[in-house]
Figure 1 (tube, rainbow, N blue to C red):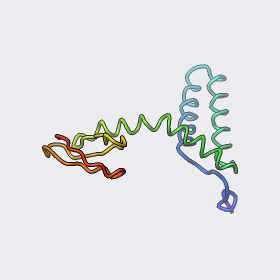
Figure 2: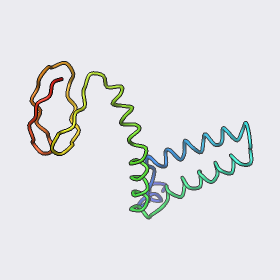
Figure 3: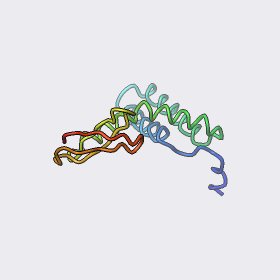
Figure 4: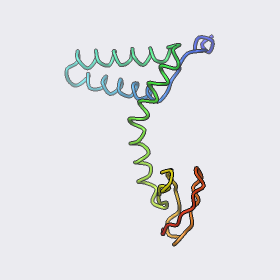
Length: 123
């Protein structure tokens, strides 16, 4: 029965998860200071989260999620790359595709997987 209710609805995505975390944070803040302000904000964020979850306007919700990921997705990828110390990230000089190659292998010919341009790099 519950599955049939959610059929054709947006469900959860990255923006909904961020809204849920923000709601929990606001609820915790409301326990310590400005209870009426933070609790009303938390309920508003919770309402928005549930509204997005049961919405049938999927293209609009996907567009909102894409904008959220475009804005905040870069932070996660930069952080992940900074932890990746065994690889070097280069850009293809022709199409600007990002290419990951292992460090410490010396001079290497690289073929771009997107445009098939061949270039050399010292790693």
